[in-house]
Image (cartoon, rainbow, N blue to C red; front, side):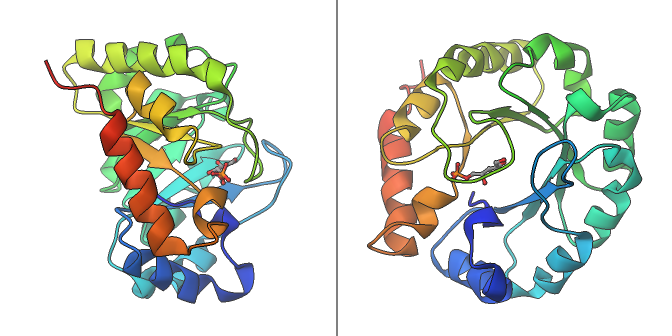
Length: 221
Ligand code: DX5
């Protein structure tokens, strides 16, 4: 799943169509408010304007304070999944219920320092669990490999819960880091700079990362 944060901001519609042609499974929109994270990005109108560029699912990763005030607008913009941060969700359980009531899939994203304990009691209310492997705010940062034990803990938590939850990893994913994240138990890999900066182009980047991920998957017992 590519992060659009690293795309050419002057050609978002075309960039989304290019990602689709490169064979991605879904597209993540990193929404930032300049408060929760030190960057400002996509209002719902940007996403809505690019909805017709592809049919692949859209995921809104809300790195914003008071996300509950905005979730309906991101669903309206065409996001099938809305992910919020428990660090800024005072009433997280209620917010997750509201995302599902709006007909979207609900998810939580954890900053590197945030323990899994923060979401243990809302596992039944989520479809996606995202473990950040960078401190959120920018693309092109270094992968925090010390998050791999946390990814493995999340894998065990999900497998032990009986719920159907996708385990996503986001930040610094590329040819040299993807195997570690998949080996620790990730299902979905978010990648930005590794896709848009590949000298052999987007299609090569997507197929190369997918091949490395498949090769790194632990054989099912
Ligand atoms: C960072 C974002 C990530 C980022 C990924 O706050 O949540 O999705 O854009 O970009 P790379 O893969 O370059 O780290």
